[in-house]
Image (cartoon, rainbow over all chains, first blue to last red; front, side, top):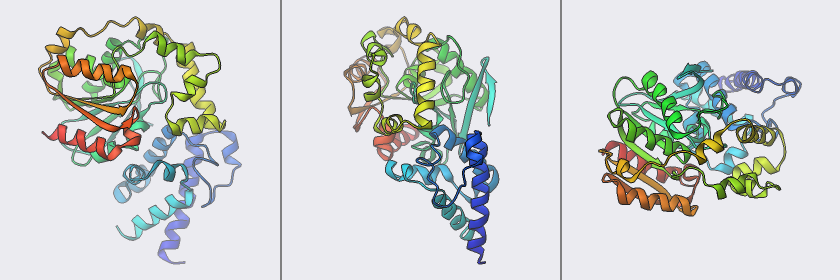
Length: 98
Length: 255
């Protein structure tokens, strides 16, 4: 596995655990979270929950990533369409090119 | 989760960035929360500055109480946030809508604690009986139409987010005295506004309700330090025109 692939696989696991913690409801533990899972359509994450996710990402990755700046650079449609895989790619990219 | 008691209220606070006097940002009513700023212009302002955002009483993850939603009580809560996170000196304030009215109330009552004041699309008075009537209208359609498009989408698709959004709005309307308190809230008299010594950015939208535009005209007329700016956007400037709004506020803070 390349370094990038290893980063991606690690990020997917980490994000899945964070999302489950943030939502904190029974159903989400039984929902498989994949690269194709949409934050808005599948998980129905609220914006205030995205803030909580951001906090967890910062605790784990520190200054390697800047989640709020990344999201604030997007159009509304892009944020609505955002998938777990987009965040995984972003984190892996930041880790590979620090 | 950074939730701590401030001014007797369990308060959700988030900060971004470092350096300079703190910029405290206040969001709007009902659908507003830290997220309103956090994913729009706060990351831009946080370059070279410490940005402090908090959820207002009864909003986001901050405690909901039965009362205390009038501008003076809300400004009291803001004062606790300023004392805890302001870094000792005067802070800059940026407030949208209801949050802008709270920031204005705070600034005229405690001018020594405020550096630059940016009021974004704030109405005075915050609520009018006609506005409340629309919110409480039986079919709820008027209330939904008052939401920005992305919230309408969440609301009308009827899932988990819609339920949570509706639950919080209904709780604020039915379990608190927010509406009654704001309808009875004393106006800020012209002479008090006129006595404010600092500069005030009045950032308003071109496509907004008449009561916002009337407020802009009144504040621009009576406040000597008024700097009116109108951006091409709806009431939700931070969503419609984040880059323009960030630029206007950044220029004002740095001037």
